Image 1 (cartoon, rainbow, N blue to C red):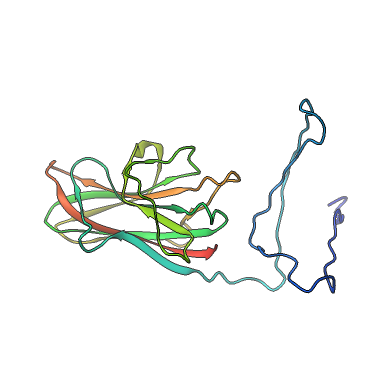
Image 2 (image 1 turned 30 degrees about the vertical axis):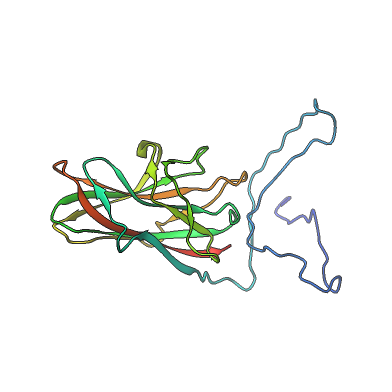
Length: 220
C-alpha cells in the first residue's frame, strides 16, 4: 500500500497459456527468501513487514481423521516416571501438510491414579524420541508417522494440555475450540513432535496403560 492505495508489484498471467494447472500446491505458506548472486563475500538483507492471502470464494477446512496408539496387546507399563504413550510427527515426505491434533485417550487395566499431558516440540533440532524410536507410517496415504520410543526429556517439550486418570476410569482430552495443537514443519523440513505422557500420581509400582492420540489432516 502507498498513501492508502494498493500497488501491484508482480502479476502472473496464466489464462489460456497452458493445458495443465499452473500450480500444484495451492496450500503452500507465504515465505520470503534472499539469495546472493555474487561471490562468497556478497551480503544482503531483507525485511518483511506483513503478508496476507485472500480467497474470494472462501474456504471450508475438510480434514481426514486419523488415530494411533497402544491398542490390543500393545499396552505399556507406567510407573512414577514420565512415560511416552505415543508420539507423532510429519513424514519427511509430507512436511507441508497441516495436521491438527484433537486430543488423546487413556485407559488403565488396574485401579491407580495417574497424571497425563500432551507435550509439544516445535521443530526440534534433534529427535526427542531417542530409544528405539521406530517411527512407523500411520498409513501410506497419511502425512503422519508415530512412535512408542522413549522420550529423551519431557522438559524440552511444552505441555499443552494436562489431565488425570483414576480407578480404571478412562481419561479423555479433546481440543477446545480454536485452542488446538498443530503439527507443522520449519523451512528446513524439521517437523514438530507431539507426545502423550502418562505417569503414576502416587506410588511407584507400575501399572499397564493403553492409549491413543487422534488428529485431522488437511493437506499432504
